[in-house]
Image (tube, rainbow over all chains, first blue to last red; front, side):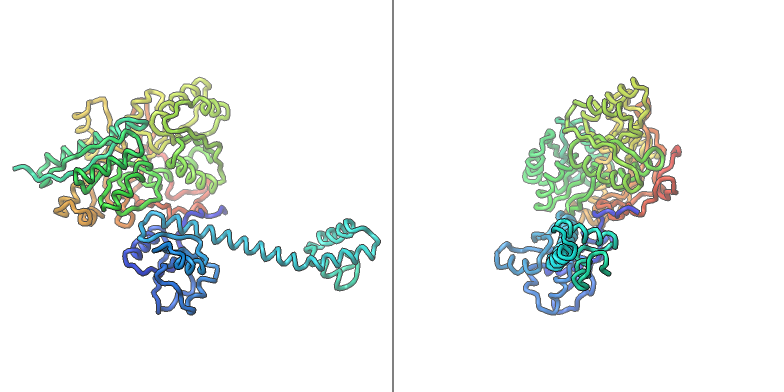
Length: 195
Length: 387
């Protein structure tokens, strides 16, 4: 099965918070053309539990805490700018928007802003995952070092050879170097005997 | 009694790299204007104010501005390339005028101030590529002019071909108006691709088709060529080398509808037995009629009322029934496939069973669910002669 076109947005759900009726109707029309399911939100109303993307008007900022959570759930945000003053931009930046549109809106630009927001969000999520993996590995460096020292001591080998032994053991048992190292240090044993 | 006059602007380049196409659009638009002015069905006359931006992008902006300021038109017909339309767009949006755009284009635009009368990408690229995948090959050699029409057509082609486990063998681009085509033709003769997709426009395309025909004939090769834009006046410009090109279009001169026969007969009476309208010219003719009928129904040239009156109103045009889809401002029309013959005409071998809704953002295209080759393609064109 091939990957679906990343430029087709059909079937996605958008939560739209736009104050001006004309802007709202332009967004609604354009999103419907793209096959996107549109839910509108106004202050004081409940919030849709699930949305794939949020378009928010700077007129609604700052947000109250009851709905703020939706902007911190990894959903891409498209900001609608009425003014470029730093005070307004500062409020918007808190929502970490993935792209933006300048009001008054026209149909041109909306599709590009959405594609860019989805793409930016996808890449940001990938980066976040990569960073958390790297942080995990960084934390376990201490354990790997302890395991290398232990193997050097037990087998009277130099550091490169000790590390090679640990890596081979990890490969043979289909585990990460960090996991094998944790086992070695926990049991005080050599790589082969570990586990 | 003279009928009250309504001014309309016509923006067509009559010189520059795509002058042939611009002239055809102008000729057909003026023919429609004259017919409407002579017809008792319309209680007004259209006064055409023609401007020639000479194929120079910046001049579209100036000409459009001049038409709106000095002739007070509410409606403009014209533009050919997307670059020219994008020049005019900010002015028509700012001044709230309506541009009736006749050319087929690559989609991904939906202005409320434009009526897109030509084919959308789901009308032209999709049926052509699906036909090729189903009947010729999954491996396509692309050659085109280096601008947005080719880039986007190739992007869609690549998605469809890749989903069918095929490949784009090459993507060769030439600048608009470029005539040095020999290196690409030599590469084709050397690599012998199963099919060549030509998205060149204007003189580059004519030079390429002639060179391709003579080189492949000399090498004893029979490589089919595809096009989404080739039209009858171009077949006449290119000459005998133009035969055998598989072309996707909503209009061909050979459509056997009474409305089309009458249209072609009127055209030939006006421009000579040996001449032919072009697809975009026919589309400009349709645009003028859609506009005039909407003005007649609305009782005014006011753009909001004209738009309201125009949407959904079915017009039995030369290409068959056409109407404007209110969701997208693009036209519902009937896609067709044909192959060019030695008489500089097209033999139509497939047409959609019914007019097809425009999908300018290809939002209904899901390449993941397209069946791969050798499986049944429910909506795919199959070879048959359309009488």
